[in-house]
Length: 123
Image (cartoon, rainbow, N blue to C red; front, side, top):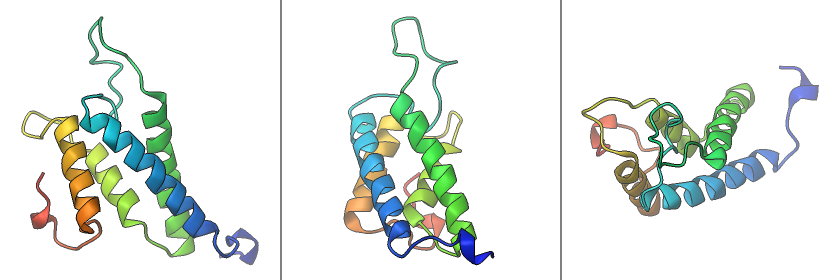
């Protein structure tokens, strides 16, 4: 890696913390019933539903960028990785977004995010 591409000390922690703060805020809103955090709902929204959630779209973009930076810096952000994994879940057998958000928040509060073993995940 080119030394000019390396981050200043503390930048990685600041980025990770900013992501975590935004993620928690969006998870709390999603847990209360707002859809669109884990996937863009524009195509599935009905006429009466809000069709976009700009903050959620920005969070998904930030998570992807943070994951790329982490790979370049040989760092890891388990919160980001798990959030992006949840964003790939689609289908009838998966829980709805509010439930995913509540369960993810509970795992964060218990300090379980980033632990190995997907068999432990409730989804």
